[in-house]
Image (tube, rainbow, N blue to C red; front, side, top):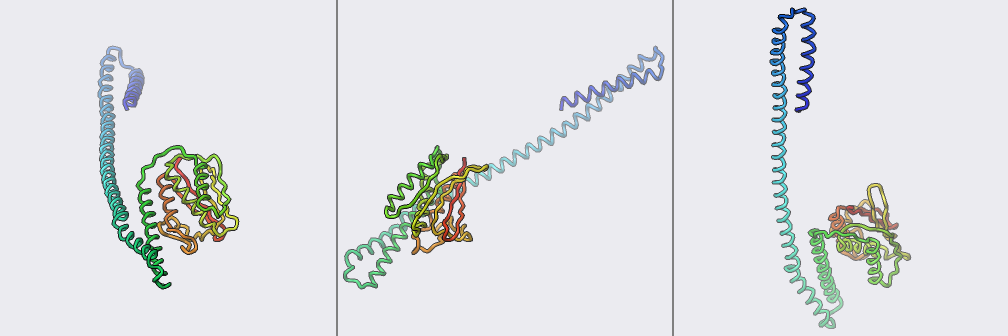
Length: 317
């Protein structure tokens, strides 16, 4: 603003001198009177330039006042946002403590009666099976199996809770090598099911190695399970390079699913197939989604019934 005021003052002064000198020349004022006219011209210039300078300074003062008011308002807004953020952080901390308390209750309070039910049913099966009729044995086995399933559900629920509260330890991860290790573990876990697995090379990401291993393990286990009816099961782990970044995928030629129910896949305990067909707790894909969300990525699926499924996912660079 100081440059503007200086420029306006200079232009006004030069214009004033030029116009008033020309005017005095045209009026043909005697030489004896010219000194008085020059003095008058100077005083008029001082008065006009003073008024002009006052107006410019007042304008600048109003601008400064408006800027100061805007700055104060911005500071108040920042303080309000910081206060809201602190409240949100306190609520989040409280929610985390409640989640930890819930996890403790699940892992201790609920496991005690579950261990009793599971243990006593096992004792009856081991010691009194010969004295029980077939129907009673059937019910007893159902109690035993239900206790075992409940224990697995509790474990999965606790793992999901822990993953949601995990702190990331980011590092460079060889996703190709990680997928190959998990695939080899799957082959050892299911030695009677040879599966052709193709894994793309040169897949490198930045993330938490432990959590990414859990995600890949769940995705490959899912593909392994739902290709169980195929005579020539095939699974592919690959990447698509796009302008928006790398999109990784796990593809299989298994049973697939109806895309109308795709959103259900990533909700805990939601299943698109009966447990009698494909056993499981419906927690694996929900776990994968939580892990990818922690990494700033997302997951989605494409499939057709009887023609396999492809799970795509992204990771924050």
